[in-house]
Length: 94
Image (cartoon, rainbow, N blue to C red; front, top):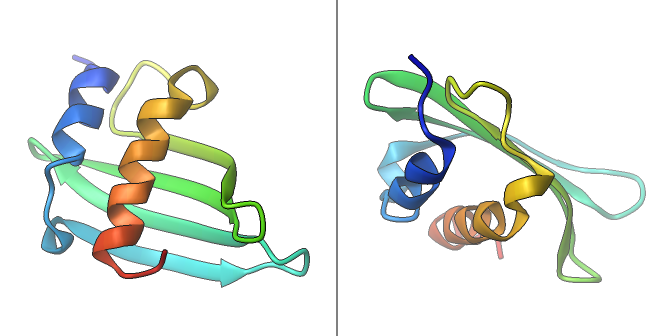
């Protein structure tokens, strides 16, 4: 059975730093920063990735999957942005 992406997104906004695993943080040649974080939601491993443009204070893209029918992306941009902002705040990266 697939997880409901909106439910997972809501739950992640309440996760503590210890519930996320920082997998990657890479500065690209254009100045953007690629982030990859892992998490476990009700026993299912998930991830959220983003490319952040610090000079514009905006995300170029954000993707997340946690056993959804398909990865969450553009159709949930506002909610995914809130999750990434939460994670970057927890890790003091923003």
